Image (cartoon, rainbow, N blue to C red; front, top):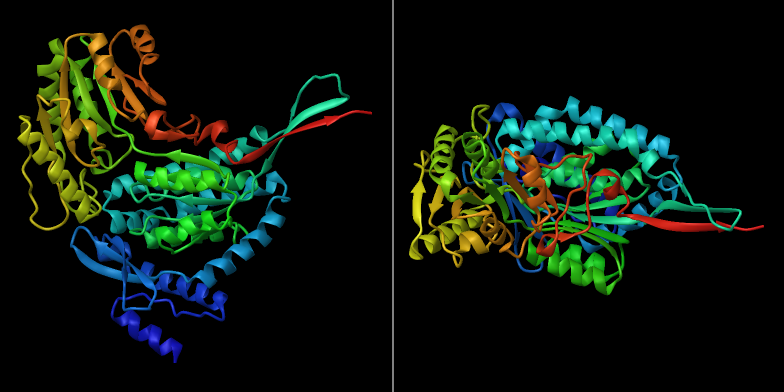
Length: 517
């Protein structure tokens, strides 16, 4: 009977998981079966079936669902039932059992699995990239690059984790003194939709390399991607429950912290989410990493290569259709370079192709959700009402959640395009008279994630970088994360660091051991 029901549901393109209150394991298996059916229907041959996910209640008393909606066609594609409380509790119990074994697994074995995981990512690159493009509209060429970057990350920690976690000997009066690095336990990773593979991998890979286990609460609009990531870990040979995806609501994820069911939390998301997660984790004294919003300044000094700066700035603003925490968002240009910079910036925007994200030639796809597009429209209206001059590119498509790239000239300090994080292709250009004014404008934000400085005098740029309030400064380049370098921000852009050896040490117990006769 159950098989007939699942078959009937599949024909309606609705993926459902039969509730099994008395058997959480059976219910978890149903979710996996549903995800495999969905992934098969969403093959590259079917073109763009991009999806947005939201939660809704089906009928009173029933469990909520996650809806996958195609932002390119605006069609509902699939539906997932969220996991019940009993299912989640069963998974956590099994995760704890796995942790006891995984933390004792020799690190050479753990890193060996990371090497295999990198291979799986490369072998399945096209399929994983297609899922991303389907679920959040990322142009397929960018999605392919994202999967490859995750593989590079796996290779990096496979090669370096053992060295990063080796005990550090310290000379003291004792016979022996050293610092050991031991896993903390169960990490809850709450991750966003905009880089749905990369954000998860950069949190999870160093954590599992260090001997932790990971529970993923992914953004509600990328459930297929979330399940595909779990499947990748399984294909690589990781033991069951080292990495597990939870299809739950944000409220259910918060309850895991409140109920003291996890040992540490990593969140990449909005400031509002950061405040909520941070306050709950603080009450339970959990180790915490927050990577939050950004309003990155892109500073162009009077001696810069203005053409190169203008073209790179346009690329930096349109990363992921403008939906990136480290996309350049405020362009601060010295007066003598402003006219030429603006010319090259707009020229580069006009070269970019807007359209079907499954087309290899597409540079800018739709934004991920309708509410994001609505928010961008509101921010642009605010700029117009406050006197901004808008240069808006034509919108070639009438369907899909597209937002045409635009430039805001003569922005004033109170405009939302300067005070808020703008998660889409709006680019305000601020003209300043001198270096000091540029620094003041760059730091005039509650955020402090990344910044770029353009000048032919790199010594000048390095001096200036020390005055910029940010966790990352790129000189004559755009900000981009790198597994070898720590990533994170200051002010309201977050706490803690991801990537490099700093990232792997965020979720370990740094234990001092002193030995005397």
